[in-house]
Amino acid sequence: MRAVLVVLLLLVVLVVGGALALVGVAVEDAPRVAREVVIGPDEVARAVRIVEGHHPSRMRNGALASMTLSPADADLAANYLASRVARGSASVGLGSGTATVSLSLPLPANPLGAWLNLQAELAATPGLPSVTALRVGKVPLPGFLAGYAGEQLLAWLRTRPEAQAGLEALQGIRFTPTGLTVLYDWSDDLPGRVRAGAMPAGQRERLRAYQERLAAVPGRQASLTGLLAPLMALAAERSATGDPVAENQAAIVVLTMHVLGKPLALVEPEAAAWARVPPRAVTLAGRDDFPKHFMVSAALAALAGTALADAVGLYKEVEDSRGGSGFSFNDIAADRAGTRFGERAAAMAGAAALQARVAAGLRESDILPPTADLPEFMPEAEFVARFGGVDGPGYRRMMEEIERRVAALPL
Image 1 (tube, helix red, strand yellow):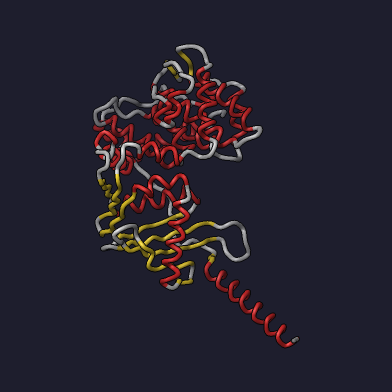
Image 2: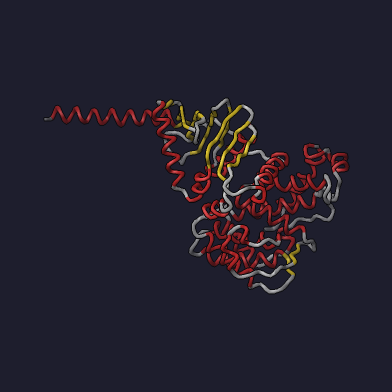
């Protein structure tokens, strides 16, 4: 009997030791994919064209639709999602009917390693792609295990409210060396279902609370600081028993839609039945365009990341220089100030402190740097001649000055 127990103990030791050894080569000390998220005005312009091409007004209920991304855009989208969702990095390579996805994700502190590195080979099928090979760190998994892992990931995604509507509509993904094509069934209620699924738990109630507080603010004219204060005061109250980041995000969304003159129902359809906020002229430094620049950038930074916020602001100025009001560095300053505000609002370490500071009252100079001396209203030819375009040394010097001014803001 003792011999049997010894053998069983040895087997347990071997199994546990083997498992630890396997984990040791699966988890690594360094990422295999280490990339910054770089989004410029050209990338934003391409995204705008894609979105415009799939606007609901252009779609037919019940039709099979397709959307194609270039290899560069598919790669950028994957890296952006990896950064936003898990603070990692990703890359995508496309072939004929195949795709290679590489992913590096940081792990919590542990004695085995700091990074989980994955590389998956995908193959197009009549439906969704299948996983044909999977490597975890230095460990290649057998084909049947790779396929099983892919099936389990898809099954898990189908349980996620934010993914369900999209997966139900998704009919296939095609890979070619020149692009990635997504096939999906369009229905007129698809945007609403996607928005409803993407709404985090409790966020609908938060949006309603800030909509009601905004509706209670009197006056048909206001400074942006005069609207931020009561909303962030409410955020501070609610954060005593809630999540300060989620509260800040909800307050920023409500105020952004109000400043843009857009109904909140575009974000949350149920808001059509909530308290109505009368139209209001909102200004910052005496201008009605600065609040729009500030709040859109704040919302993008709080909800979608700083790289995207910066790129959207720059894209808007480049487009203006090509036929709009012209390239304006003071608009860029308002964009950057809003981005920094959104960053702080979405950072758990500073979210509550920001609420208290704003609720106590703000001067406009607390959130917006001096802009009167910054060049504006420049057509593209003048902007390129004076500053060398968005890659020129003059542009970089001006951006460094704007960053210095934003960094010096009291808030």
